[in-house]
Image (tube, rainbow, N blue to C red; front, top):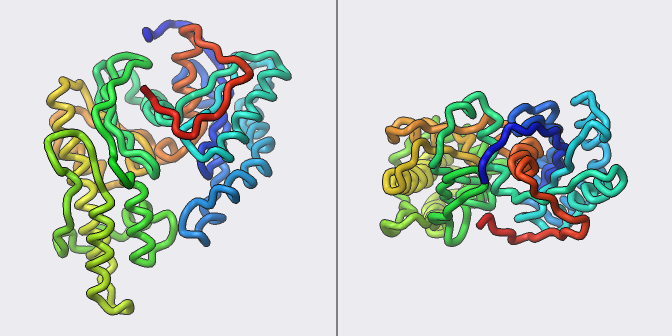
Amino acid sequence: MSSTKQTSRILAIETSCDETSAAVVEDGRTILSNIIASQVDLHAQFGGVFPEVASRRHIEVIHAVVQQALEEAHMGLDDIDCIAVTRGPGLVGSLLVGVNMAKGLALARNKPLLGINHIEGHIYSLWLTEQANEIEFPVLTLVVSGGHTELYLMTDHGQYKHLGGTLDDAAGEAFDKVGRLLGLPFPGGPAIDKLAPSGNATAYKFPRAVMDDGYNFSFSGLKTAVSRQIKHFDKNKLPVADLAASFQTAVIEALVTKTAWAAEAHGATAVHMAGGVSANRELRRTMTQQLSLPVRYPTPILCTDNAAMIGAAAHWQFVNGRRDTLNIDVIPSLQLI
């Protein structure tokens, strides 16, 4: 998919999990608004996202979120060229809320509609940064989030080769599960990121999810190893900081090792990181320090689920002529390629 000079103003909607988000993005690069209604506090009592609760909250707030996105962009629906929405992967109930909202708006105002892959949205979050002008293909992208740990070689806009991914828990899931084991608040990723610098990262030698010379990951064994280590301690004397730091180091070493192998083998010009875990400070530091290639990542607000990234991904498809019909449905397990 080659790029073009055509312009666009896209209203994007993202409801794949527990953030209700709407944004207006111009030309795939400029964020005119990006409203995110988080449900973190709501799900903290469950220690993870509760799907039925998430979909109900989306229904309650989506109209207000979309309206706020338009108001902040100083636009009405008549000023919008296209409506884009995440159609998968994600939680089926949550996805349905966003897709139905987008369909209604597209039908009411006779606007083109595009269903966008959530993972592709994360990849395009890099085009919303100041570093976008420096991007040259091929780029190796590590998408590392709560539900995904995947390596893609991107050879052009919309052109991907899947090199490998997680065989079980994603890195973000491992962070959340270990966070619960350590008694940390949900979500576990930010909590461990905050706590780990005060711990000894070499206190415990946890297994690395490297396995072989391929590009797949496995983090379930690491989670189990942490759980077994915890059983050796009295609950009130748990060395939480040391365990958090040692666990985080094991995750990061696996991510950096595989990414470096893939980047070298496939002649990448740069490494991009995207998704919630890409906000981890130690991951950013280690990846940048150990790789000779440029390492780029979005601002923290664009690492988590947000609609601006969906608008950025939609731009390149819209200007190249893609249009979806109003009968598109959600695909909870939608694949990028």
